[in-house]
Length: 203
Length: 204
Image 1 (tube, helix red, strand yellow):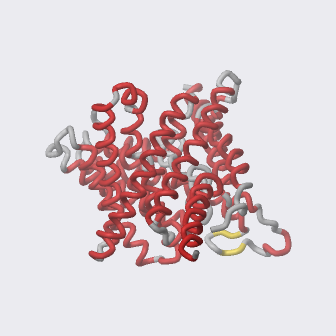
Image 2 (cartoon, chains in turn blue, purple):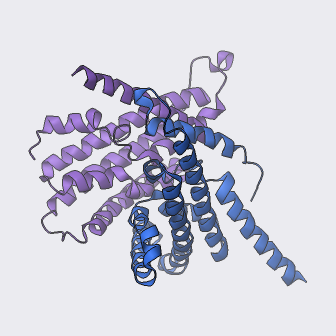
Image 3 (cartoon, chains in turn red, green):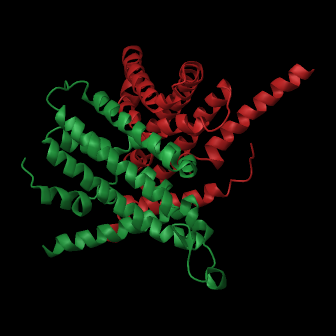
């Protein structure tokens, strides 16, 4: 019985971590990560969705990979301070690998995702999720949920922003406000809404 | 491409300012500007990294094979960021606890990568050093300006010191130290800076 309850607790905590990473702690709107590619790519809903999906996949996998490497290689060896350099190499190598596999396996998927993959290496959301993950004492599956949730939150935010930007494309704005400035203000208003979620989930 | 050092400085600090002009390095400029102390440490980190990584990449520019230059540049940048991380941890552990992850994110800060790729891989070391310092200062000025608005409005303090007689007349705007305030402030700053610049270009 105890064993079963324990398992339930783990599953619940994983669901909670996923939702809180996606909504209350949205990586784009409350931690400001992945802004550069967000401002650059969010002009259309279609491209936003493509990049968002690629990001979910990469964050979830690299968070899990980095977790394993950090806990089982860097910490036992006492070289935790090398984490930055290790993480960035793992992320770059992983993205490179995915690109090669996708290219071989499915040409269609490659053309859909291919152009976004190189962009992802320099997307700070990916490295950021791996770094924030270390602040909390997560287990492996919790770290995976944190990565997937963070990626999903980013996907959600960039898709909404893409939709809004498509709508206001034809509107006339003051010269200086066009482009990044108005996008930042839109994101600010969205962030207000997402801040409203905070307090709903406590871990 | 021959630049004079004066041109390089002017470009980095104002004309081609990385934050509002090229819209690079936005993530950290939003995250750390809620308190002036955080901002100053972050600025130190960025200036240190851009200038030194620019010099290194410029020195090695003829030896790095074209195909793998990105990964080499990332590794060079990452090693300087690691130094900054350790230095800040030693000098100010309290601040490091908050801005730690963002210091790590200097690696993926597009300003540094951008300068390395656009400038240092094609120019001489000394000029690249100037370019790195200038972009770093341009970034820092923008951050300090934003922090100068956010910290007083959000908490009624500057660098942790209270405004005179704060308790009598001041009411903090909580929104300013929360994420939305950061987006609004940066949006408004970008608006003014770009508007001013387009008017200048119109005159010419």
